Image (tube, rainbow over all chains, first blue to last red; front, side, top):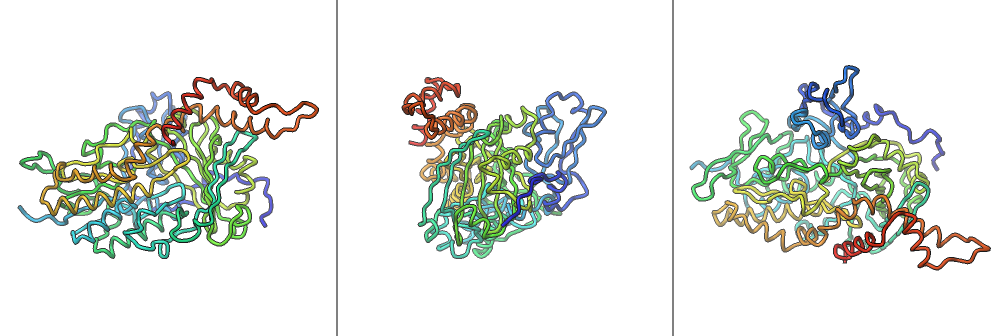
Length: 101
Length: 439
């Protein structure tokens, strides 16, 4: 039997992402134009990206990290600022590699 | 005119692509199956259940060889409010024996197995290869025609008579070919899940199953204010727990997807099932959820679209299917390519057999029948009002409130409907839509 754990199921986000395998390319497959984001009031990408890759900066912009991307497409679909997100798939063989999905 | 490199190029070695390649290769066509991941299935994620009936004549007795986790013999639908749960639970022992029905499976294993069949049939599988665009030419009669694909490999252009795009929910090929309009975020949901490891006996005991039997639990009312649903599926030594969230609804609030899963896991009806499970993988994927309304044109000159790329996911509440629609549409695309190449006409007209195959079979018949279902199921009343109405009725029925006498069912229904804020008119309209869809 499994003992009851009062702290469960809290997992830090970095521990959560460390369960996912990635082969990271040197060059990003998604590029975010932070200048466009500075004017954005909705910022839906920050809440919606399942990998939490969109991080607001103190200067009012948004920094994007491509390394742990699920390649799902959520960000470009929820983004309502034309030209903020240039989205493509990683080069062949790179990016997320699922195991038990 | 120089001969093409291949007769058929299939983009994407998921269930649609592999089935298309099996059909084409078995008919003797020179078939190339391209996959951008390091192996088929490596980019693929879903809720957790496949219904492989459509493979019966393609891979006879597939159940003896497919890499599956558990046979689904219990299907539960749970309606939750914050503190209540009403479950409808169906168990069928026959689904644990041939010819079976549905099974949980890991896509990196299942898709790889299916692609192996394409290779066994004679197709060439090339992984680590991302398609970056279409090659196009002019045909005298039909105008612009797809003549192959451009890949990210050096000298990576590949020509073919027919390109079958099975490149998934974001299908850049369908968009580039102009078959898909601008995607609307309200047509998509985000699926997010956790694979939680638990010992096999613990899963058997918690879910009331044994041997290779498994459980499929669909949940409504577990996603806070966000329109969507949840699921728990049993694998052999892990469970898949996750939520499906309407993109526009997710984007309009401030709770992140992993927190929505965490909240569902804390629910009194879910916690005892999932407690102690060790997170072994977190994953996410988009789902084309709007059915018929969002589907692209599926045939171009020299081009066919299948699977998620054609939005062939059935998200109709009690039916949540996708892999079977991918396999079905992939097969029909492959068969159509064979037919068109033999007839020497791969124009949109020459490929029109695809539309009729889809139209005559479950692929589009189910979607036509259930065309109102996605909007109903993800609509505000089903999402936010009916769960409370339904569990409220159950509570009133089962509460013993002595010395008050039991209220009649009609009174309970009327009062709970009003308490939940459901107007009689809206309920009638939704019942009519539900009967039209599901009846």
